[in-house]
Amino acid sequence: MADERPLLMIVEHDVGLQKQMRWCLDRYELVFAPDRESAITKLRRYEPAVVLLDIDLPSAAHGSNAGFATFGDIVAFAPATRVVVLADPDDRSRALRAVAMGAHDVVARPFVAATLDTILQRAFALADLEREAHELEARRIAPVPLEGLLTRDPRMLDICRQIERFATVDVPVLLNGESGTGKETLARALHRLSSRRHAGFVAIDCAAFPEALSRVGPFADASDASGGAPPTPSASDDAAPWGTLFLDDVGELPPPLQARLARHLDRDAGGHARRRDGARTDVRVVCATRRDLRELVAQGRFRADLLDRLGETVVALPPLRERHGDAALLAHALARRTAERHRRRCPTLAEDAVDAIARHRWPGNVRQLSACVERAVVVTERATIHARDLRLAPGDDEAVLPNLRQARDEAERRAVLAVMARVDGNVARAASLLGISRPTLYGLLSRFGLR
Image 1: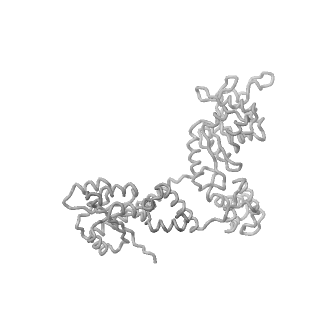
Image 2: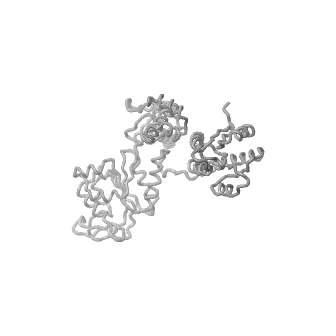
Image 3: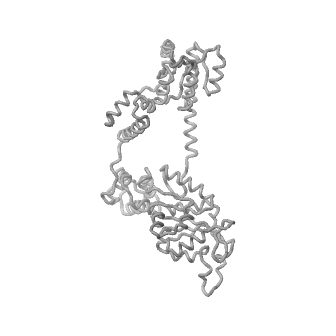
């Protein structure tokens, strides 16, 4: 069985005290560091929960005390680590200074073994409680995806937080991402979280129905009214209850409507769009595009001034293939939702099906995944869905997922490359920063062909 004793790091230069500690602290797995430099290296390598530090540690350079400098290093590199200080009982000032720096406790030297052991046990117990409390707090305040959005990907969770912040700021928002990445879902979430949630949400596909924009109240031009008739009350009334206008595929908007949209996005002092007839409207515009609008501007197909107005707040949505773990997560949820909608028992996704879903690149993103899973749930009569039931096109899969050893090797290779580049090939410094010994680093360099 693996050694389950708690790891205690001891920073002590006195060989006699080291031997005494080995004898009386046998309940712990002991790691000794005789000086400041080795203490830093071993602190980064072992990440101990508790450190026993001789505050009268001498410096190898000029004989002066290095204990407080080492204490400062521990606080800087591992602020959660609890430090128990060994100090001379006649030097009260050092003990007070150690406490001020955050020492868990101060033990007089020469120490009583039973007393030191009790203090260390309490330090480990409190370190465990603090770690558990931090984990509970992290789970409590963990970001929750917006309604209608299911994700565990850090980038998407960050986008959720952006949408929550942007909902309180009444400016246009541009959602940029491939088809099927959930742009309308985020637009609706933005509307629900805003002060306009009790008003209307109007969605228009600029590629399919661009002419519909000219009939939407806030953007209906008074000059369009037949026979010079005045605009409808909903278009002219300053108190019109307009909420959010979502313009999908805004890059496909015809030039005349681009000009009208740019004009109505000009703001007056009151923060409202102003129609050409002078009437004010109150609507928030959220746009979505899968195109590079700057490229369209360079081609003369999109107005630069309109892009300036829409580009105040841009949210870039990553494709599903870049959202780590989301495809499999969504597949399970989509299978349950489809089964509930069709009032049938939800089939289980077999391991080979989940693996195929995780490896597929999904060029159509969530929309394609949804259609694939729904078809499999409806067509399959068995209680389990296998990879063959998904009918995924071959040649569009990612490489086979690495196992943990392969993933670890790749992470180690990248870390070694990055640190060696930073220290300009200095193996000693690189080993210290990586928290490993020089022989271990030489072994890694040889294994990865980096010698």
